[in-house]
Image (cartoon, rainbow, N blue to C red; front, side, top):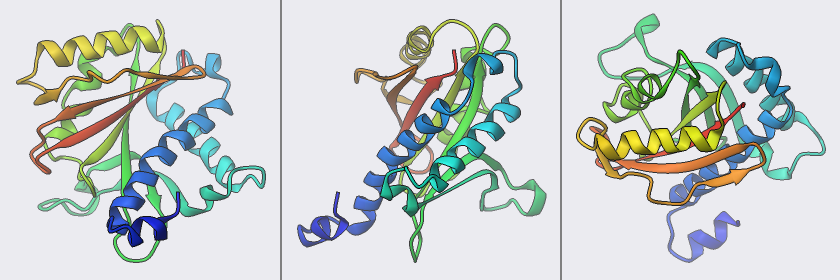
Amino acid sequence: MNPDAHSAAGIPLRETYAEQLRAHALELITLGYHRLDAPSFQHSEEDDITGELVKAIKHVLHDPESPEWVDRYIVQEQIPQNVDGRRGKHRPKMDIEIEHHRRGNPPRLGFEAKRLGPSHGVSNYLGEEGLLAFINGYYPTTHGEAGMLGYAQSKTPAAWHQHLTAALISSPTKYHTRIASDRLPTQISNALTFCSDHAGSVPELLVIHHLLSFC
C-alpha cells in the first residue's frame, strides 16, 4: 500500500497509516508467535509469555529476511500510558505497544494480553483488567482501535472464540457491545483473529482486534 497514493486520492495520511498499522501489527505478532515453542508455554505466566513474544517480534524486525515494511515499526512492552490524572508509576502500562514510526503524532496499537485456561477464563479476558480497560478508557487509543491477545493454554483458539463471542452477545450492556463480532474469524496457522465493536467512553466507537493463539 502506498501512502502517497491514498493522500492523492483525498484519504488522510493518518487514516492510511492507521490502516497499515492494523494489518501489520497483527502480522508482526503472528510472525513472533511462529518463532516460539508454543507447547513450552502451556503453564507459563502472562508476563513471561509476553516478554518472550516481544523478544521474538524484535527478532522479526531485525531479520534481514523479513519484509521491508517491518522497518516502519517499533515494538515495546510494559509502556506507561499518558492518562489524565495519573503520573509517574501510577500510569497504566500497556502489555505490548506497536507504533508506526514517523514524525508528528504517530498511530499506535496497544495490546492487552491474557491467559485463557482452566484458571484464567472468559471473565478475566473480558474484565476490568482486560477488554473493559479499553472500553472504560483506562487504556488510551490513538485512533479508536486496540488489541487483545489470548494465550490459549487449554482448548483451542476456535473454542475460545466461541466462548468469548457468546459472552459478548449475552452481555451487551456490560461490554457495551455494538456488533458482537458478527464478522467471520480468520485462521492464520495456529492463531485465530476476529473483531468486536464497542461503545467506548473515549472514543465513541471502539474496535477491538482479538488474536488468540498458543494452544
